[in-house]
Each structure stands twice: as structure tokens, then as C-alpha cells.
Amino acid sequence: MIEGFETARVDLEGFRRRALITGLVAFVAGAAGALISSESREQFFRSYLLAYIFWIAIPLGCFAILMLQHMSGGVWGLVTRRVLESSTRTFPLFALLFIPLLFGLGSIFPWASPEKLAASPALNHAVEQKHLYLNVGFFIARAVFYFLVWILVARLLNHWSSEQDRTGERRLTSKLQGLSGPGLLLYGLTVTFASVDWAMSLDPQWFSTMYGLLFMGGQGLAAMAFVIAVMVLLAGRKPMSDVIKPSHLHDLGKLMLAFLMIWAYFAFSQFLIIWAGNLPEEIPFYVRRIQSSWKYVGFALIILHFALPFVLLLSRDLKRSGRRLSAVAIAVIVMRFVDLIWMTGPELHNGSFGLSWMDLMLSVGIGGVWLWFFATQLNSRPLLPIHDPDIESVFATGHGH
Image 1 (cartoon, rainbow, N blue to C red):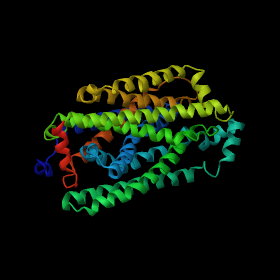
Image 2: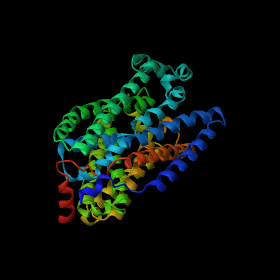
Image 3: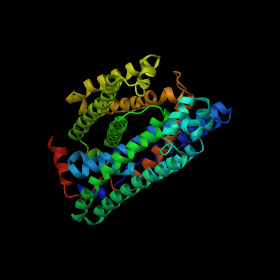
Image 4: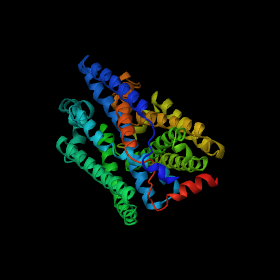
């Protein structure tokens, strides 16, 4: 059965074309909106940042899960490896998409705007204390470092995996495992600092020691939900329909439940630590969200982003049903967007409650372009790691349940 997978591909041409057209149209519409006024230009950059952070979370989460799979093994990772690898090969695209943000730093971040600093003595004082870190030059240098790390490690993982496809050498499995340990440490370091740079510094006067972990948990959850949605899509098409069985979906559903609980634990821990500490430099984050209309978004997150999917994913039958599991996965991805809005909205919208049409338009724009590029990468290599030492277990497990 493995032989046919060396050249087998899934026809994704229609999906790629629709994603690219939708993304470009939405992107152009959002860019056109930025030309209306100076206020709309400022909103464009803020909405762009929101969309950017949302979509880059998926390949970053896939990056971490891929390295976890190389270290831990398991059939679930063999059937999903190509999806994970294809996602990590999109980091160069995100490096390119980061460039527009550099032209709007003053519109996004108060610490990069002399006008905003001059208008607020308290803000100016906070930024002066952190000026060695919060300055444009060092901000750009750190971003370059993040992308260099992500692209280099992902490139090595993909290169050795491709070599394994051609040669089947067992030493390549050891090399993949050997890189994944340090790679996970680099992932944790870079994502922690990136979350501080791109999200926490929207309010330079606030900080949280849990922020990086919260973003990592959210990235893992978003990535696992995305992987499930893609695997269910592939399971309905040849040749993957002969491979992906309910037992594989069951494993992926359990992993999504685990990531859901990890994210909820980090989110609650941050709230508990800050609320119990009751320090004036920390509590404004939650005061702004609890004592305004943002509290309704918070209630929605508790119910729709944790409680409901948690209860649903306890069902064994649901986790073995591709249609129902993918519905939960897509709902989780949508709620990840809502959670990001809740995390950044009060700062991006100057404390007011609301959602700009550019938030949605640019999210569709970046998402469409990214999905087109992802599907292109997915179709460029065999759908299974055909020469992995444990590849036979995919078929044994698939038919044995």
C-alpha cells in the first residue's frame, strides 16, 4: 500500500485558486480602506497586526507539534506530518508579510509614536524605563532574529524529512529527534519575546509573566484544530481516504482536547495570579475587560471556547466522526480569533468596544493568501513519510480499529 504514496497527490487546485482570489480581493479592499483618511490608515495597520498574529499562530503551533512528534513518536504524527511540515514551510511568506507592519509602527504601538508619548506623561515615563528594549531598531532586529530561527530550523526539519523520503536512512530519524529538542527551546524563547513585542507592548505600562505561555498554548490549540480540519478534508479524497481511519481522528481529537485544557489552564492562571496580586501595574488589563462591554466577549470565551468544546470532545463517538470533529475544530479556530480580539481589542481600539470591518477583511486577506501557499506546499511532496521506520504502523493501526 505504501508504494502508491511516493507519487500520489490530492487535487487541491480548485481550493488553491479560490483561496488566492478571495485573499487578494479582501486584501485589496482593506488596503483601499486605508486611503480614506488618516484614522482609517491607522486602523488598517492595527487590523493588519491582529490578522497577522492570528494566522502566524497556526504555522508556529504546527512547528512546535512537529518537533514534539519527532521526539515522542506515534502514529498520529505520521499521518499528520506532511500537514505540519507544509505549514512550517510558510514562514518565508510571513517574513514577507511582516514588512507592511514596519511602515505603521507608530500607528500601532504607543511607544513608537512621539505624539502619543508627548500627550501622556505616565506613558512616556513607562516607555523611558523600558527604552533599551522598546525602540524601533531593536524591535526590528528581534523580529529578524525570530524569523531566522523559525525558517532555519523548519528548513532543516523539512530537508532531512525529504532526504528520508528518498533514502530511508535511519540516521535521519535520529537527526530529526536531535534537532527537535533544542528547536523546542528556541521556539519557546522566540515566541515568548514575539508575544511581548507584537501584543503585550500595545500597552507598555502593563506586563504579565504568563503571556508567552498563554500564546504558546493558543498556538498549539489553533494548530491542532487546523490539522484536524485538513485531515478530515483529505480523508474524503483519494488516496488518503484509504489511510485515515476513525482511530486516527480519535487520537487527534484527544490531542485537541489536551491543548484546549492547556490553553484554559494558562488563561486562568494568568487571571488568578494578576487578580490575587492586585498590583496597580497589572490589574488594568482585566479591569478594562471586566468593567466594560468586553466582559460579554469574556463570557463567550468561557462558554464557547472552553466549556462547550470540552464537553463535546469528551465524546468518543464525536472524536471518531470526521464531520462532527471537524465542525468542533473549525469552531475552535473561530474562537481563537475571538480570543485574540479580546486579548488585544481594548488597546487596538483605544479602549472602546467594537470590531472594525478591516479586522475581518484583512484576516480574510492574509488567511486566503496563506491557505493558497500552504496548499501549494502540501501538494509538493508525498502525503505520507513513506520511508519512516514506523510507517507500516499507520496502515496496521488504521485497519486494526
